[in-house]
Image (cartoon, rainbow, N blue to C red; front, side, top):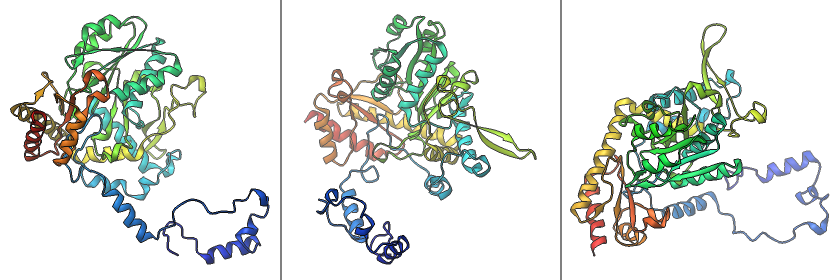
Length: 451
């Protein structure tokens, strides 16, 4: 096998292949390539390492990273450190799942199709919506696709989005909208929530949809009832909610507030932070809109013998219907990560998801209380889930450097999202954080701010 597990061609293998072709050497194999354009020197790359040397080298590089297994993390802002049941890795590591391609042939893809069907069903239960697709790339693209669906369905060209929606999601939305020549109007936040009065001013008869986040980027729980009522001011305007699915184990689901489309990122359910990806987006809506849903849906049916089976159905993408009729060019789904979320949801069950959501709320509010005891100003005053804002009174970057030296991964520097939030830190507290970690974090952060 030689020295390289992933380059298994031996000298004997090469000799046998050359003999079959009928040439004496690799140089003779490339005889048709003119001599003057052949590269004569050696590539300026490092000498190849043996497998043992390579593993040691890569391990040394990996150990330089700060990771959440060894360092308590209070960083969220879209990617979170949550408990993942051990069964998740066991299931998604099975070769029939991690090597599976698009299940176009149902007769040999029943396992994969059923896994996707279960994912759709679980998301419908969490969001209280009627239909969910097989998954999207991530939360931001799900939100942008929801906006495009609203435009295609209402024939309106104005998209209204709250400033309290994750800034990266808003950037993706604007990228999508530019190519379609759509107008994107941002509504400012007031006291950490969408400004209802400003929203009333911009919703009109040309509004295709109003996009909000629940809980929002600042951790606060938006008043969906009031937001939905304002949305209906617009003729045919759709109410789109981007929601953390874990929070829906405790919060009232958007479907109860008559949301037309509910989207979000499933990273909070069974998908590791993994230095930022890959993720898995979800997309749930009403039966009325299911023929316009991007991506694909898996349906349950029976064969000619009455046996239960699963098939791809209602695919509204450009690969399957005339391009001028397509509602999206999304041509894939995150099946493996969707499976991870499905396994996590199934392993935890309704009570488990409720318990984790409850711990997130309780621990976040406990952390806020401890920080205030150490003289740290907490900005959030209303209802919030597992994130809240504190005023560092100085550079958040410098504060985070001090936290790291003390053994903590600090919160998100909101000044990176907008200069008006300089010196403000968004802190995330999940069920993974212990009382001792929270107490020590509050003590250290308080000391750094007041030193």
